[in-house]
Structures are given as C-alpha cells and as structure tokens.
Image (cartoon, rainbow, N blue to C red):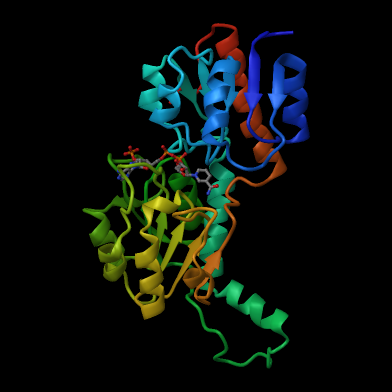
Length: 320
Ligand code: NAP
C-alpha cells in the first residue's frame, strides 16, 4: 500500500475513484453531499494528512488560523475552480493546494454549447410549452429565436475552457470569435482580442463567461456591461456565479435589455432567486458542467494522483 497517510475525501465519489482511494490510502469518505461546516474543516486540518475538498468547502483564513500546527499538508481540490479556498492563507499555514485542470475542459465547454443553443433557440421555454399541454401546433412565426450559426461570440476568459468553447463555436457553427483575457492568445482559428469587456459586450450576439471566480473577477459582468449588450444578445455563464452581478442580470432580463441568458452557476449557489426562476427567457442548469461519470472519475483520479505524490514526497502534479 502506497502512502500510508490518512486522507479525507469530503464527498462521495464515483465507484472507480472510491475503490482506488480505499486500495491505496487509509481513507475516510464523507457520506454527506452537503458542503463542510467550519467545525468539520477545522477538525480535518488536525486529523488528516491530506484533505480532498471540493466546491463550497470554504477553507478560509479563519479555518487555517484556528489550527496553528496543522497535520494536513495538502488540500487536493476536486475541481479546477478553487475560489472557495484561501490559497495564500493555506500557504502561510504550510498547506499546499492542487486542482484538477484539463479533466474538466471538454465537458464544461459542451455545457456552454448546450446553454448557448438552448438560450438562442428558446429550448427550455419550448419544452415547458409542450409539457404544459398548451401547445397549439407549428406555425411560421412560432417561438422565433436567434440563429446561432455565423454569429459573433465574445468569450470572457480564453483559457482552457474558453478555448474549447471557441473551437466548438468556430469549427462547428462558423462563429466569429472575440475574447477578453489578461494576455494575447495564440489560436489556430481566427480570434480577436477585444479592447475591453465593455467594447466586446456591445458588439457580440453571445457573451460567454469563462474566467475563474475570486475577488479579481467578481461582478466583472455588471449592470454597465449588460446595458452595453444588444437587445437580441444572450449571456451564458458556465464559470462562477459571482462573476455576474445576479441582481443586474435579473433586471436586464426583466427589462428586455438582452434576449436571454443561460446559467450553469449562480452568485449564491445553490440559492436561485425566485425572480430568476420566474423568467421564461433564462435557461437554468444545476451546475452540470462536469457531470458525467467519465469526467468525474478523471477528476477524482487526478486529485488522488496529487494526494499520492504528496504522501510519497514527490513533486505535486497540479499545484495552483
Ligand atoms: P484557465 O485555463 O485558468 O482560464 C481562465 C481564463 O480566464 C484565462 O484566459 C485568463 O486569462 C482569464 N482571466 C483570468 N482572470 C481574468 C481577469 N481578471 N480578466 C480577464 N480575464 C481573466 O481556467 P479554465 O480551466 O478554463 O476554467 C475556468 C473556470 O471555469 C474555472 O476557474 C472554474 O471556476 C470554472 N469551471 C466551471 C465548471 C462548471 O461545472 N460549470 C467546470 C469547470 C470549471 P490569462 O490566460 O490571460 O491569464
């Protein structure tokens, strides 16, 4: 048995990942699907050599401060987004942080395309109509949406996922790609770096959010950006809820400032405001970005590879 350290995995995992973890570690797999309480997080830093946390497990400065001499050496996050972890406070406490980049890219881009098409073609609204039993039949002007092929797509954050979205949109739908990032990107498809988010928002038919969450990106998409968008345009967010000012988005949708939105993530997840749920021009998914057996197993194995490296004293494969 490798790595005789004690490991806590904070949620049930796929069968394959749980089986491997049990085979190679002295592991406890928490059975609850709820986020960790502060007391649980504090206790975990004293009781385990490595913790595998995930979305919503808010290891903040107060948690690290409560355990001056932690036994824990690594938080091997399950997921690429780690804005729920205070990485600087962890480092100060001598705790490394890793994540699972790459494993999530294609699945999350697929969900972006799902939302783009659903929002453009009013698929959620149409499905509700059929289920209601009120559908009166096809006619030439029934539920007209936005023709996505050939339109302009603006991507906020052309990283791994943003690039995978751009490739799908360019090669599959002949879309023109513009992006906002902190640096120029070399792509094998035409993509123009926009002068600013505001300028890009004003000229695209679809705006997709693909930047990480955190203080730097909080509310990047605010009332001003939404007001700059064209009335037929759609906003898609597959990144983190806090990047979009939810209240401003609700107002923009209510006022018809934009035609629709497709969301996989929410500012105060899992709370989704009643005002948002009441709107017909928004497609709402329950954070499905990486939700396939194959991808969740890939993510889990990647997290376990980091745990193993830590316990064996090797370089961490995916430090953040
Ligand atoms: P990534 O490869 O690190 O890409 C992030 C991109 O955002 C980069 O292009 C980066 O630009 C840009 N960026 C960062 N901060 C910025 C800022 N302040 N202004 C403008 N651009 C900025 O990350 P990824 O793997 O694509 O993942 C992106 C995020 O998606 C994750 O952090 C996670 O929160 C989210 N996600 C969601 C799901 C889901 O289930 N819905 C699944 C997976 C991931 P530079 O390269 O120039 O720095």
